[in-house]
Length: 182
Length: 182
Image (cartoon, rainbow over all chains, first blue to last red; front, side, top):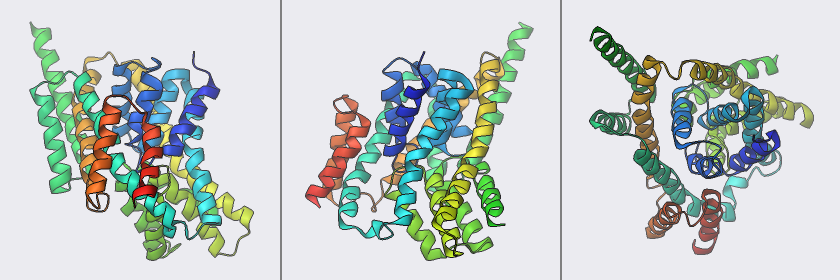
């Protein structure tokens, strides 16, 4: 069993390096939790999916779901505090002392290097997940159409998630009825 | 009572954010700039810039910063301002915490139900599509400023893909590269 202290430490570490919204931290969570075999590949994809669908901050949702999977409600509390604490402290320090932080020459240079790397940080786990999910023709259709709708037509992700839930619920209900009849 | 207002505002922001942090920005802007007039548009733009240059989810970053700023500007003491910061951060995390914790229980109880599995099968590719969208929307001229950016992105991609360097080290290294080459 994973200790609560360990859960706190892992999420604090990830929280301290989460740049560009929660999605780039998918790679870090995968490394810390799946490669240590605390989560299976399947658990991991389920967690990402639920975190994306539920309201709230993606990064925090991942912490809550993973913490719960590892140690129940206590695990959730510890993981959430762990992931929120580093950004809280850093922003508080910036607000209190470093109001010119964003104009600092070194910070600007460092972030010029970080930003393109973050794209890779999102791309690599996405490709891994595509590989470890069983993809059918309609899965590809959903991937491509959701990307097209959000990127090109600026449709809000909320509508896409609602539509997918409705259609998937209907299809699985229909398939089940057909099977029962047989 | 400013603490109650901060709490309620950020609680609502946390509750109605679906599909990632950047969707949250316009909601935050509307509430804290237009409705309450706690901060100006310029300060808001600063907060967004700082959030992009510090680790942590943008929701937590802006809650922490705005919570502090609002109290500071009303002439509160340092301690009271930190308390404001804490109030806003706690409030923005709380709704996802409650909702996702309930979702965990639902997941554990229903994960083998055909309807739930059907919905998850539809949501998984949608999530992958939304993650891909995040990668695409970050591949913009703000993040890719010259040919060096493309090299950093490619190098990070290869290092991650072949598991040579961990994701958190990639962030550290790319910051270092940024400092050296820009």
